[in-house]
Image 1 (cartoon, rainbow, N blue to C red):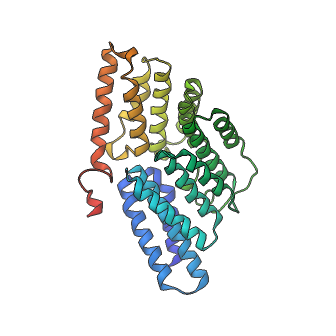
Image 2: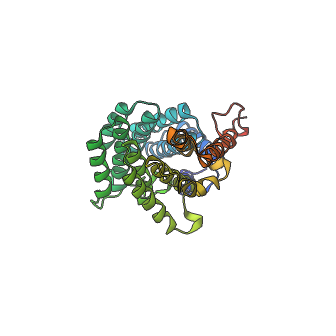
Image 3: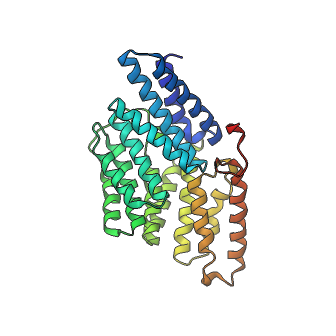
Length: 318
C-alpha cells in the first residue's frame, strides 16, 4: 500500500466514523494502524517516515476513540498515548493536541479531573492549531472543571469554546475532519453535560435542545448517531434534574431506538445517571418511574455483548 493510499484510507475512516458500525470501525482502524507501523519500519527515507508516523498516529487516535466507545478505557488510554508519541516524534502539533485532549477526556472519565486540566493546558500550547482544535480543548476543559465543581472556570471554558473564531485551520481537525472535527452540534452536546455536572438544569436543557436542533438540520444519513443519542439522554437528565418526570421518556425515545451495537460508553454512562435519578424518593410511588427504570436496565444489558469490556471476548478479538 502506498503512503498516499494509507492517508486516504485513514481520512476516509475518520469521515465515515459516525456512520459506520463501531465494530467495523474498530477492525478497520486496527488494520490501518498495523499497516502504518509496518511502513515506519520498512522505510528510512525521512519524508516517508514522517508520513508513516503521521498515519500511524492518526490511526491510533481513531482506534483509541472507538475503543472508548466500545467500553475499553485502558486500551483507549494506551492508544492515545501512542498517538501522542508519534505526534511528538514528527513534531506534529495538531496530532499531539488531539491525543492530549483525548487523554484529558479519558482522565476525567477515570475520576481524575485535575489531571484533565493539566493535559488540556499541555495540548493548548502545541503549535499549528486551528479554531476547531482549540474549541475542542475548551469543551474538554469545561467538562473537567464541571467534574471539579468549579462553576466559574467551567462557564468561562464554555464561553471560550463558543467564541473561538480566529479563522485558523489545521490539517487534522479541519482538513481531515470527521471524528477529528468538533462541529457546533457536538459542542452543544458536550456543554449540556457540563451544565448537568454543575447542577444547572436550564443550561443543560438549552444546550441539549440546541444540539438536537443542529443535528436535525443534517440529512438523516449524515447525523452522528453517538452524538445525537447522548444529546437525547442529556435532555432527559436535565428534565429529571428539575424533578419533571413528564417528558423524560419522550426525550429518551430516540435513544431507546438505537441498535445495541451503537450504544457507546458515553450513552450508557448517561443512561446510568437517568436510572439513578429515577430512584430518587420523589419518584418512589411512581409506576412510570419504575417501568422506565426497568426499561433502561434492559437497554444497557443488551449493549454489553457489543463491548470490548464484555465478559465474553468479542469475535473481533479472536
